[in-house]
Image (cartoon, rainbow, N blue to C red; front, side, top):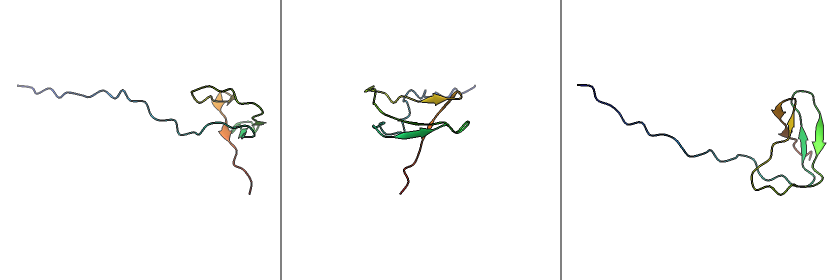
Length: 64
């Protein structure tokens, strides 16, 4: 007699690791090196990705 195991489906989404984008934040493309600065925030509820070279741009760290 074969015993069937119940498999629980994972339906919970992973939390977004990014914080909200603010005016003045800088992003850089890891492929071509293009850098952009946020002048105006869109106000979306969800996080928006800035895409370049078909990949999301990464937040540039502020120099101290």
